[in-house]
Length: 468
Image (cartoon, rainbow, N blue to C red; front, side):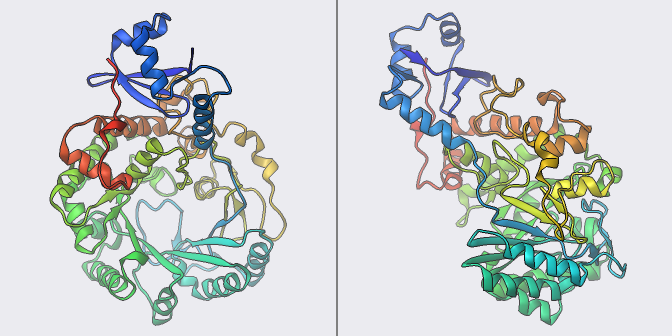
């Protein structure tokens, strides 16, 4: 009998065990003692075989199934089919937590020049993919509407399928911009900071501008449908809004997916906010928010999710859930997506662009007018996986987790700081702790939300295996 290596972690009422392919179960210290001392009894081995944690020979079905699950836990970058375009850094707001180091609306020299725009189109035309996602960021991209129109027209002519996302503050929207946003292949991503009072405090400042934003948000949802509009709150850990207030505000506009984000340690926020290391306060708040969602969903006709928590939950339950670019393993930079800045500079991620903008470290990888320079980040990409990392190999959450080297560089100026000391590790350890606490809960309210969030008609208690 061969047993796949098990990793373990003490939890509230026992010990959680997981293998390299993400299979998991809960047991106790007695089983742990038998496992580490090679004294497993018949019931132990039968349980391990029955649940895919052991095999007889390397050519039997159990070994093949484990290998399949393990391989599908790894993300393999495909063809470059996602681009983030920054046609301008100009913005008509001055948010204190802005992470992109925007400039004022009337500041010249921070838009694509005609030469850069033409080079962007040529770069897009050189891509081998037949499907493409284009995300316009800024600044406020609607201030460079002509460039957005040129890009969209070009992409429609050159790709079989293309989707556009405009990351806009929806503050001032011209008739031409409304017409641009109305098309079926074009989606809106905006910011809604918790509730009306918080949004005014953090973003719009004046009551008039605040009402203008919420009027535009209502118009976008009414005219285009909720499926075309997403809104994300940015949360200041120094001024936390009650979870119920956020849920009520979002559901009041029909927004049923909420992506909670703490202020990022980038751009202007590096100086003005306690954003470098606030994982303790954030984790406690996020946990309370998940509990509030569970209570809300128990009685609600339309359920609500916290987007990132649901993403992590699905990574636990599925071996091939890789949709979010910030949580992959390996997380190779500059392959599956790329960023083109306002001046034509290429970056492997948006956070790398921000890191370079503040002068901390140059992570640019070329210029759209010349070529990609991926060799510049080869050494970084060599560390862009947790599979063999000495700080990760004994963690039961390794199969579900990933790496974020750019975040480590931003916060600590290095990538070799012990993982358990990093904000990334502390936040994700909490998230997976929370997920497994809920998975093994027998509370019907919890099970209802877990079923909804995992995409199942009902929660299967067989998922939460226990061996005693």
